[in-house]
Length: 559
Image 1: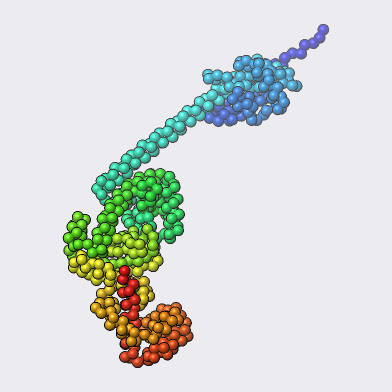
Image 2 (image 1 turned 180 degrees about the vertical axis):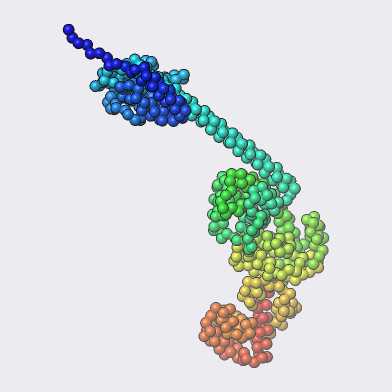
């Protein structure tokens, strides 16, 4: 008769009680954990202590096989187990594991549903008490995992709610700030405070220094501390690149220590608004305020531009009428309509510089800055200014050059006259002063007709033939020689005498070598027959050369 092996005895009641206590303590630890991997690690470590079993693996429906300690199943065995899971109920049940007499898939469950399986195996079937402990372990692990997941969801929801509240608070703050910016800038625009008021308002709103520049980089307004003096002006090519990039950008453009935005209607740049931010700390609110202020500044500059254009047209028409010799009654009536008093003494200033569209704007800006006047007309190669003041004209010239960013600028100043009918004469004098400036001094300073001395006297001679006779008497031979040879001996003599017979000054002015000057002076003595060292001869030759320059300038002025 065959002998049937007896099942191994189950744990004693004391061992069962100890296992239940350990499982209870483990359940409490697992339920307090928010880490799913930690929970599964605790459960996996506890399997061997609850009976003669080993852990084959932990499989979650939404996560697959878990990396836990004490796992014995190979990848092939896991694949075979997954096939068995497909036909296994959520209550779990027996599974086949190669080389093991007994294997069971214990369900990991919670109130929310089925989570997966904890698979344990043994050489033989464990006692019912051991199986009970394994089932309770799987159940408590499932509950702990569900609790951890629920707390994670709650934390995620709370974090999402906190983020939403923070975003909402930020949006509300931005809207409130945007409303404050809008209201403040609207008051500035309504009060007509101009670019200065906009700069001050933006500085008070942001706390950063603010600069308002015109299209050419000249400072028009500053608000805040640390104003540079002198204000740095960007080179022309770099300025054009900055304007083009800022115009294409939909947000403030960073240029070194500044955030800049163009101001003007559509593609027409009338100015630039800059927020000085060397620490690059300006945030979204400051950028929003900067863009809003740029919009208001653009409208303000467009309005000022339109007003200036209208005044410019009317003023240009008035200046042209004055220069053309229109009746006094007509020009006074037009001036009264413009609110301009022509009944005070006025003079004409002629400004010559680069031939481009920005020259007239530069002269107009310099007129405002120096208080020269407000009426001017742009002609083909010159700007004609009407002024009722007697300013230091060199300052006016430097102001024009500053607006242009450097370069050549020549100014001729006519005499002041009480009646508008005499202003064509002042214009003629200003142009004559320019021509004599070129012929006599060769520099590019401001020349006043009233300070021309003997040149002014020669220009006012009623009988030019007398002056021409005097010139022929002293310079005739040289003039004839120059006409035949195409040389410039008379010009050399004129510059030599104006330089006080200084070799160094003359060679510098004519840009010639010292030996060349000596040769020319020797030829001048030979051809003219004059002794340049004789005081009387020196006086008469200087007067003759000045008369020659004056006659040349007068001939150039004739229509």
